[in-house]
Length: 151
Image (cartoon, rainbow, N blue to C red; front, side, top):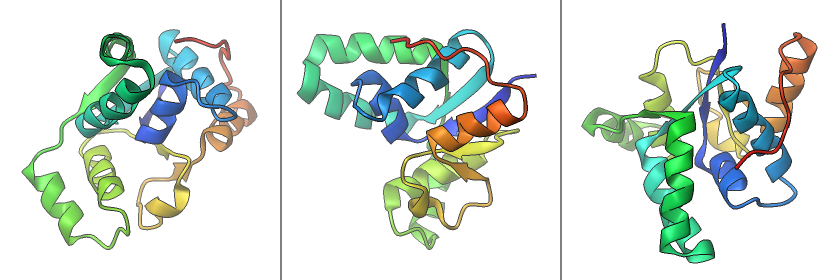
């Protein structure tokens, strides 16, 4: 059975914008998702944040094309009033990360949050890994899978 992970916006952005030196690990995560070796969840909030940034880098049409590709590879977690309220009431230092976290908590079976900002998830009850840590853990447990770059 494939792992279910929740991906923070920064890792998805590394993949979509090919941000170096971080893109290699993000590409490997998405390659695993493409081959069925990994189930990735992102919050609905990530799509608007990603559009805003990628549009500035690549323009409107390419940003939408990249988000369409992303949508085919991920499951989207809803952001409802309850996640907003939990974020407002939480002790997270970053409100956007609080929303991400409470969105992840609504999904059954999430085994990890994968982010490059681990400190922002210090209060997480879900294990938090950087992309390279998560991939290293998979390798140690024999679930390495594909590592090819995909867009």
